[in-house]
Length: 267
Image (cartoon, rainbow, N blue to C red; front, top):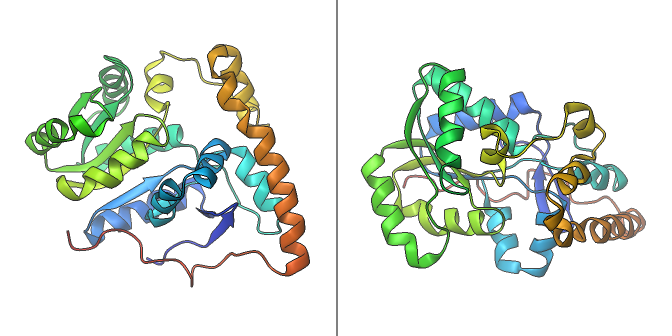
């Protein structure tokens, strides 16, 4: 299966996929072998990537970049390369767990606070009978813990699907650093997905998410996040300015022809 069409938003490449297309593409990646990192960029992540070239390189080397954030849809529309759908990491954890139960995949849930990954996995296992949970634990994102976590994941392997919930950019760095040393096919950073799925944190209602105000709802639930939300107006201003420049200079970057080969083949 060919790599989906992508658009570039403030230096970060984002795939133009629907949820169903993303699921089909990930199944194809799994069937094709190799190891693959999946990322879920949103406005905050894009702004962090602008300040951190190493983080940006990790995002742009991923096998699939899901448009997880209404801000990305807004920016893509501004520059004349619209994305068709928002595909959130939380929704994909649920849908991929459902797909894993149907396919017999082994899934490991890593990250979040103590007990949250296990609660998330237990809830999904009840919802999707047949889900094979290879493990569920908080782990640690710091490099000093890498050897221990590699040993634990190797002991739990083989693992078809690894969800890592350390928050960006820690989870993306952790996957890029450790995936080559693990018996894992697909690895995806999922931020706060375990908190939502386990019920520890209330998720915005669907109508709020459709309007693009899920960030505001979460801020109301977790006021301590206000500093992180300062990136959103900065993103909007940059998106407008960049769209104007690109339209004056010519068509924005949007082509799979320039995209590097997906994934880590043959490991």
